Length: 173
Image (tube, rainbow, N blue to C red; front, side):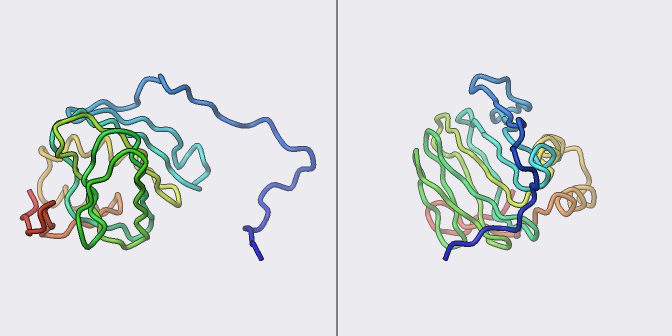
């Protein structure tokens, strides 16, 4: 039998409380690597999940091998090509491909195609990933201690090594 969570709404008639966001909305964050659209944040979903659209501009980049202790992360490719690491291997993902990474799962992603790519990133339960996305643009100016504190504050635990798309290990930059 199918099960559902315990009720959290106890009204009898429902409420008018949905939020609509047009596709052409201005991104909340623009970086050298692309644009971040904060579709549903920890705040707007009362902590249930966070959903972000990341439009990468084709410049090579993405985080090295890491894991999270409090949140799962999912990737859904909207367009272009992305290399996704599932903890064992790199996969060239294209439009419609999906990767789910449970809490504690090793993962990484990179846009090495030289072409624009767009994907949805889902974090559950919700976490304040906006601060992470905005803060990574300032990492170069931080000391090693400050950088470590930033990553721990944002539940991102990076390993010293990561496997490259061709299978060999690459030292983290």
